[in-house]
Image 1: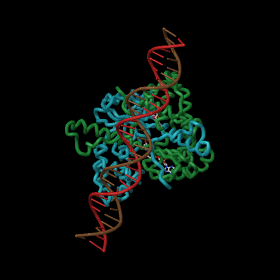
Image 2: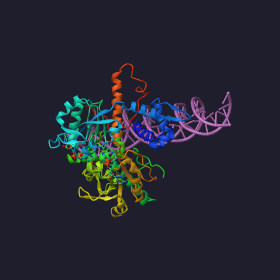
Image 3: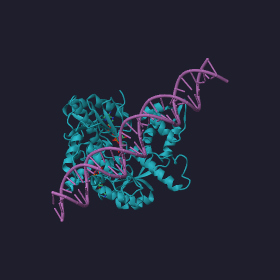
Image 4: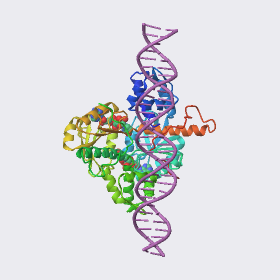
Length: 230
Length: 230
DNA sequence: CGCGATTTGTGCACGTCTTCACAAGCGCCT
DNA sequence: AGGCGCTTGTGAAGACGTGCACAAATCGCG
Ligand SMILES: NC(=O)c1ccc[n+]([C@@H]2O[C@H](COP(=O)([O-])OP(=O)(O)OC[C@H]3O[C@@H](n4cnc5c(N)ncnc54)[C@H](O)[C@@H]3O)[C@@H](O)[C@H]2O)c1
Ligand SMILES: NC(=O)c1ccc[n+]([C@@H]2O[C@H](COP(=O)([O-])OP(=O)(O)OC[C@H]3O[C@@H](n4cnc5c(N)ncnc54)[C@H](O)[C@@H]3O)[C@@H](O)[C@H]2O)c1
């Protein structure tokens, strides 16, 4: 489940604040989900909670980290060290969540050789050599959309089977390769959509606005974080 | 639907390459979804496709932009101009997707006054004044997690009802306020999970690995982009 | 040792999303 | 004008995710 990382983060917070056990309701609250959903997720792991007590925080962290494959620190190659790439390269939050940025790659000769956070930017053509040195588990694409497909092909060619894509385009990859996409403009547009709905609802409380805004049954949106009561 | 922005991006690409009409299958391909799903989504908009021909690209763009509320350019306030905030502030991709960064805010006096992309960083305490000048539609939080809740409260206090949160924490907001979260570490961990599954499957083709990796029915993950044929 | 408080694990029902498959509609060509 | 091929729109079935509600299990305490 995609909620496991969320639980893991909440658990780490709880561990730091000294909790040794946590009830499903407490953890569900910290992760922002329904407690029944959380219990069902955890039971899928074959996880051992104790009835009447709750879950052992340390044990649960171990279990989730094992299922997520975080027992080994995975090496990440970051391609495209521009505006966004710089921010990612300088981010220390990855290290604490089980990842290690192993290589920075760019096509611009002007950027090659630059040092960021103790790591030197290398040319994209060195990707095969980089992959041979460090066994790269995940490739991150932070290049313009026009270059993204080409970079993806190069990553696949050297054996990378997981890609995180920041460029606003769909990538075509062989089956067996996983691609996840992060598009900030999409997130903003979804928020804008909700704004628009809210505005048109209050503007025409009786008539319900135009035909386009009065959609039958409303449009479902994959929730990112539900509202939590004041 | 959360897929509308994806369709919109694909449509803009098609418009630039000179297409005037597009079949559901063509657009579905460009957006990386099933064609039946796309048709059902579009029919929900009351959209006018022509049977035997397809959809009018220009008209469809107009319709989707209207539904998403992009007919007006929405003002965005960015709070936290650090590592990530700099990248976001310098990103020109927002302007072309219907948004305008109207204000940059930070709590660090050392950052206040800095100019990025023609916009001066102002102090977070000026938020009420900023909100009064520009009617802020969306707030973006790029502060450390420890400050995120406080910033969210401040945004809500000045009337912002849509928040995009980059900090790895759940925000508590009144109902009526929408929060979307982007957590890169979560994305990487989901990829890591898939890597782990792939690895354990190939390692033990007969036995099926340990009890924990051989989960009954497999764990579902919200797809980010499905694999597209070679 | 027994009882009550508490919390997990899950059966079940419900609503939603997805996909197939096909009828209806449109334009083009003859 | 008529037929043919192509494409949309949608009905229906199945898969899936969600949340309630409750039985089973455990601990602490008298
Ligand atoms: N900056 C942001 O905040 C932001 C936000 C959302 C999305 N994005 C997306 O992220 C991507 C990168 O954005 P950016 O602002 O960093 O752009 P940028 O132009 O600043 O950086 C792109 C980098 O990629 C490098 N590059 C180009 N072609 C390459 C290739 N074939 N191989 C390797 N490297 C190559 C360039 O040399 C450059 O350094 C874009 O697709 C953008 O749409 C950026
Ligand atoms: N940098 C990345 O690539 C990256 C990636 C994923 C997630 N994140 C998350 O994004 C957030 C920001 O990351 P960063 O690397 O830019 O951190 P950063 O420390 O570089 O920047 C944080 C900025 O927020 C400002 N700030 C702190 N408290 C504030 C307050 N109360 N009001 C207004 N501004 C305040 C600070 O002055 C600083 O400028 C963090 O939560 C981080 O976990 C960052």
